[in-house]
Amino acid sequence: MQAIRILQHGGPEVLEFTDLPTPAPGPGQALIRIEAAGINFIDTYLREGRYPTPLPSTLGQEAAGIIIALGANTAAGGFHVGDRVAWTHFPGTYAQLAVAPLDLLVHVPEAITSQQAAAAMLQGMTAHYLAHSVYPLRSGDEILIHAGAGGVGLLLTQIAKSLGARVFTTVSNEEKAELSRAAGADEVILYTREDFAEAVKKLSPEGLHVVYDSVGKTTFDKSLSVLRRRGTMVLFGASSGAVPPFDLIRLSQLGSLYITRPTLKDYMATREELERRAGEVFRSIADGSLTLRIEHIYPLAAAADAHRDLEGRKTTGKLLLIP
Ligand code: NDP
Image 1: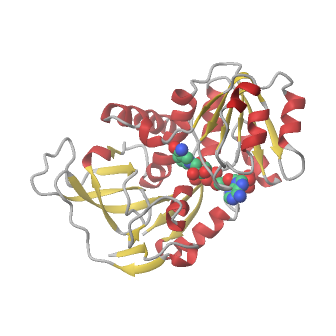
Image 2: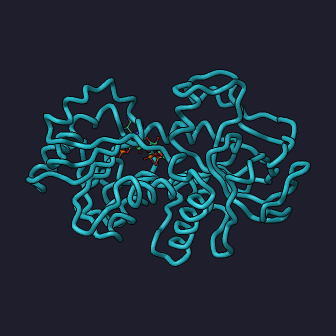
Image 3: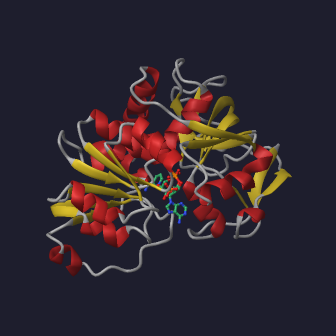
């Protein structure tokens, strides 16, 4: 089968398009023919070696496809050969075939295409847990979402608006600003033209209830400065680099702030939570209340181009790989 593998950590050039043996599903696992695989920012961290990864490694951790075999002695657990499934958080999805544990699979409803399912698992469930579980948004909350036209940003904006929040976003250019507005953002700030903290303070003198910050290094300090007393900082990514060590006393000096650094794995921690969260995301896509923007579909062999585009801030919405 064809796959994208890395033998060493580094830039996009370490992504190697290669032939690998068909993986064998172990007990409790399925072998799946991938119809669409998601590209996520975390794939670039793993490629670079920012998080420990065994080498060689097949990149990617989100996909949708058809089960073609089950591991020996595997109790079906509701899954059968021929079922259309999707999953996230199991490596090896930049490939034509992949194995995945049954306990991470969810069935894809008829109304959802495999491309939509692959686009929704990681970013969709992330937007869902950020808005519903990390800080359950209430009507009237004033919030800031960085990278408002990004994969998570567009989805989080829509969910936050549906919950009644007043949504501020930051974006780098006018095209992204248009997309963010179309997703429902009330105040879109082009941080390349004006200081986002100054702009927020003008529009919300009391300060914001929450900042959802996935950019990290370049935004973190100013994000803290726009929170109101007892506001919440949700640092959930590091697109610009990791935030340096932080002295907790600053939370008191800035107004008894809360801070959390959540990750999706802990918000799909049980089978019940995974099925409920994925089910709600799929239902919102099917009924039209959540719109996915699949901006670019790359052939598997062009995975390195997708990484360059994502890291180069050239993209909006979701990127997919089709094997
Ligand atoms: P995005 O589509 O949001 O792409 C990243 C965007 O960040 C860029 O388009 C760019 O938007 C902005 N950005 C600002 N500074 C930089 C920089 N120096 N380099 C690159 N991009 C920059 O990606 P995703 O939606 O896939 O992911 C968004 C973030 O959320 C990532 O940090 C990811 O790791 C994190 N994440 C965290 C999860 C969790 O559970 N903790 C789960 C899923 C994602 P602009 O041009 O407008 O500045």
